[in-house]
Image (cartoon, rainbow, N blue to C red):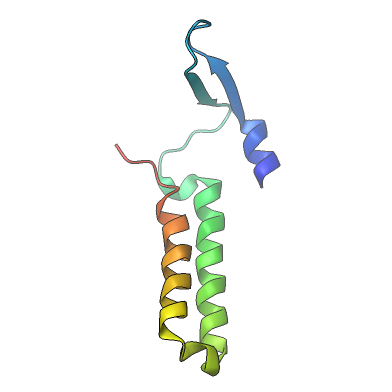
Length: 84
């Protein structure tokens, strides 16, 4: 996945004397955040985490750990969405 994302990204400097780097997506139009591959993979991760928790009754009893895992998984999905 990372290799595919890196092949889509072209890093170009907006000003040679400036250290800021501009990231441009090549040959991919994103109209919805659901189109972002990283968001799709994060959603799969969320589903895996929830399925793993629901499959183990003993694990479900550790409420604090379950809450942390669910929060981290959902956060990975939420943080891939661009915000205006």
